[in-house]
Image (cartoon, rainbow, N blue to C red; front, side):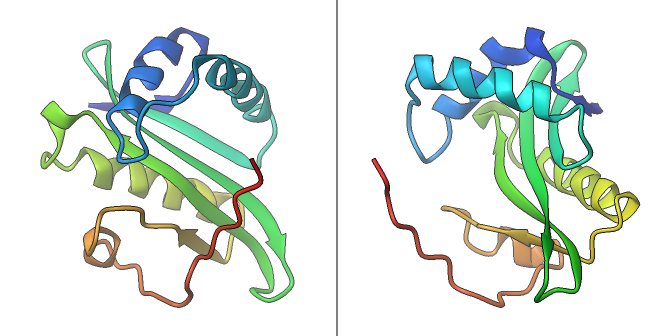
Length: 141
């Protein structure tokens, strides 16, 4: 298993994975536009968009972004999305992707990693995360 930065050739696989997430099927036009922007954002040191590659097959991905926080006293990495293909769940792939984000956050000088845990109760707690806040969402569209 290799964890590596996502690239433009991974778009179809990531779109397929996103359709397997609890959030349901994304709109293709919005995905294509946003995917290109994420690939471009990785040229800076504030976005981690990584895939789990098993022998050339993308079987999972993680997306995180760092922002400067006054409250935390430094950069904070926000783990935004974590998806592993249904056929590959329970094999530690999600943990490898999270570990990669944590390592990259440390190297970038982040002081905390936050995660919004959607539909996977207890998963992040098993990885050492502690609940410190409640996430509320205001849909804008």
